[in-house]
Length: 107
Image (cartoon, rainbow, N blue to C red):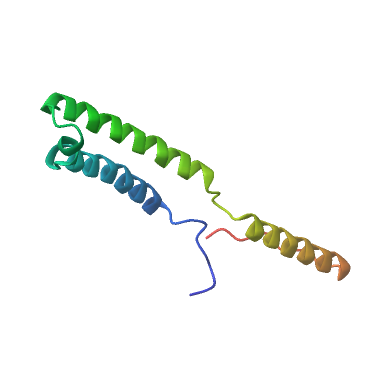
């Protein structure tokens, strides 16, 4: 290992997002169709009404998922500030010592 680091988890991020979406769909379906919880609270509910309740629950969970994903920043503010401080310090020392920074080489 030569000290290289990936910027993110790459294509696995899309796979994890797909799994999250599929889990909402399957879990909502299992809870709405096979569970007797809806029938316990709403004894006069038929299968069509249970399907509509399942679809509404599923859409509600999608909205919650979207809100949570958008509320959590990808980079914490403290980490971003620490990185910017380190870069500024590095550039200050390079300028002080009259050192020119080499551009990164592409592999």
